[in-house]
Image (cartoon, rainbow, N blue to C red; front, top):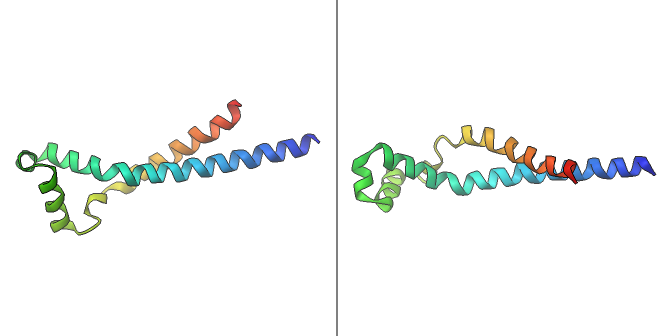
Length: 94
């Protein structure tokens, strides 16, 4: 009976880690474009004066559709494991 409980806990832990990983990736995909544009506007005062919409259009013109995702890979490398650990540790605390 104890072995079944251990298997169930391991299964729940695995699902929690997977759910955390997916959640971390989705979080990055949603928030990163806004963070990218905010950072560009902070670094280039001329773009900041022209506004958020102009900064987005300028990025799109220079780098294409996925221009606002430039540099996101480094954030994904840290965000996915962070959320996986957060979700997985919740299983152990219960």
